Length: 367
Image (tube, rainbow, N blue to C red; front, side, top):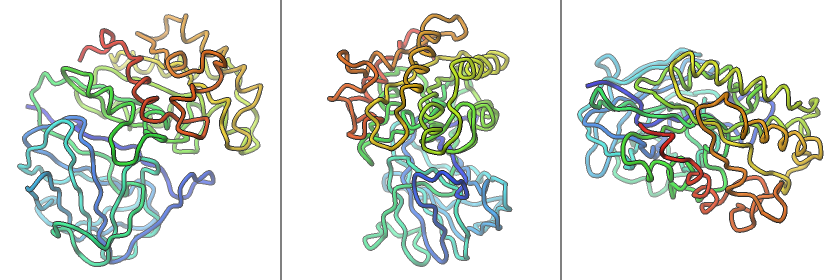
């Protein structure tokens, strides 16, 4: 048996200049959050993070629950722990069976002023926040509801040694922005429902870029932590480019060239192959209809087309899944098809996420 990732969520700093959601901190509060498991096992351990914190993080109590079973989490045998700034920790293993596709409820009691939290900012899932220590309470009816995840980076599960998994490494089109909150209809969720063996964990960050930091560390900077650290990994799926092309128009940065993006994708593929991973690349999705100022520019759309032509014809990757073709409006290919558009011209609704997942040929993702 071996430990591997049953759930992952990529985290960002609350101190970035570009913020798509408002950061927050806690004091004498319980934070309960639902973690939708990509894979399951008979035992689990939870990964907590203070990666971007500027003060020590004290957690006085923590529980994990699935169905009607709840387990107290300990850390080196104690229920209370302090995580220094910039560090992460893993709980002791607990005998709490969890199935692939099940929801695990994680409750953390934060007794002291935390400062702004390391978090996942657009997970399409709701955290419940209530005053005091309620980690063992069955329900939190008076809780504040916030769409984010805080201080958690993953859940490991104990699985047979031959378990193989993949990671979806990319931006909001993996994280799930545009899909229905709490419905688990992100493209990665749909892809997992298609698989007969193994699973895909989700390391998407809304706003993330291939070449530059913000939102989150850029792909080449976080590759070791968010991809190579996962045991049992055999494949990496990547979707980047939209934010490299769109965010400069919002922030006043110079536009990204096709050559720069191609060089970045090539470097990503080289690092995957060096680690004996197969890499599947998505074409860059359409975003001409983006309602946000500065995102859609003639230069950016021209670069998207050039980069997609290269992705479709290069032998740099082990396989390509043509997301752009799967979700575009045939009469205006720079735009998302109206039936698949979440309403902002830049993100996919539930049907769009399904189309994105269906673009992956499972013959190229044999786990």
